[in-house]
Length: 361
Image 1 (spheres, rainbow, N blue to C red):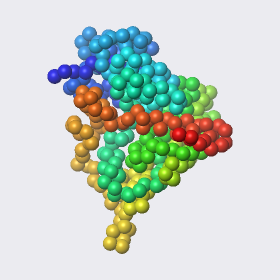
Image 2: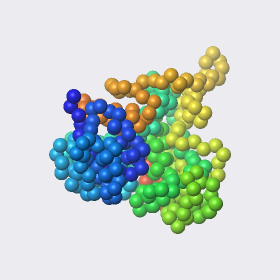
Image 3: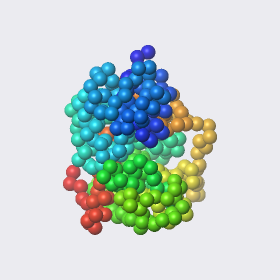
Image 4: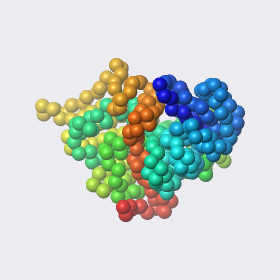
């Protein structure tokens, strides 16, 4: 069996929590190189997940010089997603880049153009698509059970769950706070369900109402207000070219009693669905309003050729590796992730200027 040789660039939290554990369960791959600015991180990753003789780097460009590496996973802060990905594609590697695609639309567009120019595959890590509820709802949408979906809510609301580690609070490294961190998952999920990637206009607001507070009851301990340089909540209103409407709600800290993360609500002309209390589909049958709740305790199937799993990260990784091995399109297309980044950037721009942002193309 031929094994894909993979290099990991960035050996921090998301690599250890998602990418490397998932890849370690796939027989068709082997992790042969690890890169991190902190050499101890790369060494530890190589020892735990690497093949015998796996190489360790602190400069990602040196890793890219290894012509035997076919696939690279970019697991670095948002600021470096674009230039590392473009360099990897230009070096002849297929790339899985962690979400969001990039800090800005221009950076994300450069990534897509590099993929198209080199003929190398590019996908973005939106593992929420692979949850059981998301897979079921996507099938319902594909089957037309909701009809024409003209309204969606993308919800990523935490009450007091500000990530206090790494560079999450650093605007320079990340480009923003909860909107670009977890709001991106909810928006990707909603656009994917609606299969609508043509925004016309965006209005956005963002807030720093709680970031300066202390004794916060935060899930991961009090944050340092001096290091909290991003928003604590942000909201967007999106009108699509076909008239459909999407509202996006995101927060790390917000005074709400019922938080929800990376979920969506959809309304079509035949039925609706939401993930507010597990997955619920609603419609009218025999003159009565009906709510249907699927049972996910028995597992399910995924929309690709490969083994199903209850772990969204593993399912995403399997689908990605399958696409590389079979030379097919990755399930999460870079062109779709580009639209997510474009909308997020527009929300930030609108929040800063107080004006709507209109798209000309």
